[in-house]
Length: 307
View 1 (cartoon, one colour):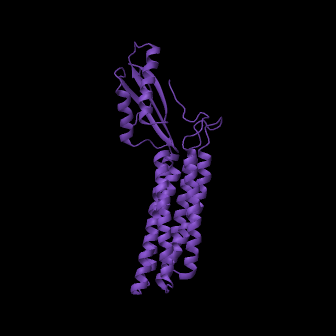
View 2: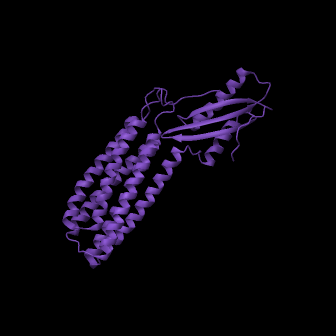
View 3: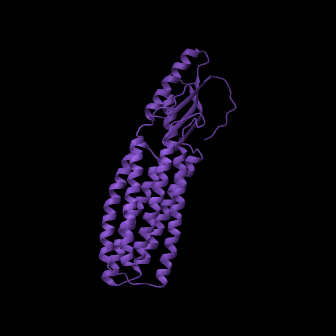
């Protein structure tokens, strides 16, 4: 059996980059809370209130992310041999709860405003705040996407979904404010708020599904599993493989499989072949922990078979 541990006490790559992304998210969210609170107090817009609530929950979710990422970046220890990557998934579940809570509150407020429309004052102030929010949020999302590409962090990916939703939300509020100001149609404000709530719930589902899959050790997508099979079977001395198991925990990937090798092959050669297969897989999945067991041809094993 050959293996390679990715978190055996060594510093985790890109830790400072992930920390920077979490601090940037908290900083942007707090800044937007202050700006939107002032605009809402002046305008009374339900759409503005929706974005204020969203930013407040974003700040809370980003703070949870900051703590979760800090914990997830800790290397494996005596009690957590597979590292702490699932802390990111737990943060994702918390974020999903925050998002759904904000959507429910927003729906209630929007329905009340539909039943009792109220005028919006000083819409230009709200529009200016929204434009500022779009610029600040777009910069943050671009940075988060860069970090996700470098680190594969599910927590930062989930956090970026919040802020992508914010971009749509802010644009929707601008449209509503312009319609109300130009046409006097007060229903535009709560209707846009309801549309924003739908976007928020959709984002929550994506975060919830990804976090749940990771906590439940869901297998890689089938095309990725097939890629692993092809990499292993590409070695001319590998006859077959079985019992391929894969999972993801935070930024870490885990791959284990059984290689079927000629029964007459020496233990030394079997070890060399396994090392070569491991190197091929790790080249395709950098940083993955790969565990390979060697089976001689013709030996039947009682492992479960999954398609």
